[in-house]
Length: 462
Image (cartoon, rainbow, N blue to C red; front, top):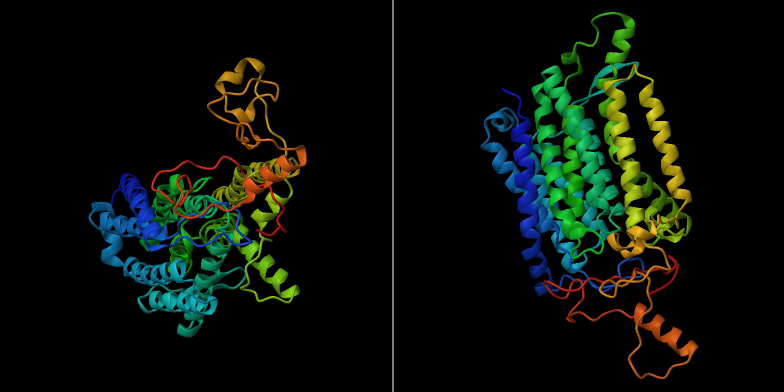
């Protein structure tokens, strides 16, 4: 089997293209069937926006698997392993549950049961953890029940972690795309570097997952014209978990020949064996931390762990003053730092510069967190060439493009006092827009996007 880099790239591009092209028709379908729930107290967006974006993402998944099955260098993945079929079966089930939830808002316990059934379907078809490399002990074989329980637990945790972080436009898709890119590099290195064919399915899953996220993100970036909904967030969470399960429980560490050479060389060579235990955790580190904090917060307040609120990490970033786009970019930064830092350290564990780079990047991230209201300003001579948000306040405003935080215009001839004007502006900004009115993100196939971000406090009610 040759170097399948071009085949992976083709699979990724086809998956992204199909997802992107399907998202527009899916958006119209979601509007037609009424999959546009009313704005809730915990929501950040201000306009009714259609869901069901997971339909397009599932179409991209199917297209990616079909294309990979017909490529010369990737046919062996389907001939030697049943894992792609197991993934497709579990993904179809979890996607169907998500579609029903996006339309009818099914109970959280029913969704949890569906997630466990989808994981069990994959286990029955062979996608399960067979053994675990444990530091200081070695490779420990798992019984059938142990492997099943561990697999189901990992799938459920990953799905809910991704679902919990899906609270801002483009956040979940971007974070999962970053994580899958890091995972692809690690899995591809195991396959081509060590010649381990068992790592090929996980490499394919990561490439397809990147395509699904990249194809959907142009429609989902702020201000989003469609949400992926539970049909999308649970789907990409399951695909991410499937890759982690495949690379962790199916790859035999003895095939890496780690015990050859000196003791120091063997110690460094052990890292690629133990990194599958750490990498899935680093991939979902931010979503998992958000999940744990949410459960503790809700339980401490006497609420159900499944009760929704506005206390997630991305909500906190908005509360301390970060804009929507900057909060998303900060979450991207920390996800990339953790995922690629773990992969880089597993490849060059003997190099101390990896640690210094991670520390320096962490310091940059902390500075960004402590400067929520900092906005770079362009020089005066460049005001005509940059977006309005980066111009000096004294610069002449382009009448064609209003400022993001500009005042709401008042009708000509209206007689209002200062207090009445402020009340009118506040009411106009906070009033929900009715479904079916032209200009709403989710009301028409093409419509104007709101340029007025929501600056309300997290604890405020809608």
